[in-house]
Image (cartoon, rainbow, N blue to C red):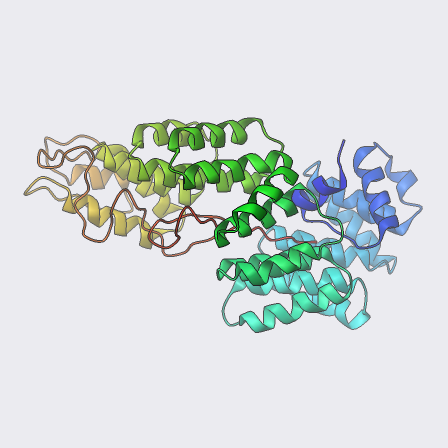
Length: 393
């Protein structure tokens, strides 16, 4: 059974009208036939969203949205705004946003979507332009826009300014309390942090882990983070944040093998986790595996960061050894010293996973773009976390 917070936090769908929320829950939690819901424009629209988000049936979703548009039901355009945001086709999403803005339909959702899209597209849109759209959405009663304002301020470490927006959310859920606790933690307001940790329920375990981290009780923090990751009722974005905290904790305490064990168990790894894995393997001198993960990162579109770490591998190599980083992985291996297998580098001068690099210390990972809750010790203090989940509603 879906709760409203599940629909909002997992699918990014939010409408300020309580009657519409009841319809959402009814459709998402029950197996209505298409003929039944088709009699009501809004129910039919929600049925289409369920096909997209729950069933993964894109073709039927599009068929339903097209029918809505043909019948002059503007919710069909709203559906396409959600879809094109989800698929990363931001220009198409903006076209529908502009159309509905002219129609003055569902403006809270539209303005919030424009703010999110501009934020994802970054240049040439300034923060002030994005803030203006979130403020417009807030005027139309959309709580998600308040949360997005808070997250954007927090990404600039303006935690004090971010907290009032979260406190103003009318229907706070566990995730909202988690973020308030998180921002108070980053401000050093430990009394408030502890207060909201209790209200955050399962998310509170993440906050408790951060408290252990702050007190340098690393083993307790690591154990609780991993338990929360596997057992708690939290969003996928929060699980991703947990993995980033775990990665930084393991680098700080030189628990490279533990980090490898954790990350290797994750089926779908994004580029950030792949880079963590590569750096962890490099730290224990398993350069062949480090090379392979760097190659994956490069194929995934993060060539700059991958090549930066690769240069460090060459600094760590034995004298006279030079690895190449070609598009053809096998060729890159063949170009190395004949005694090296699978891109491995042997270096007797490095001990205990030490990496020769003046710019990187204690297992720090090279990554120019910080987002989605990543902790980087040189950038953030005392285990500070930046939470940056976009609410699409």
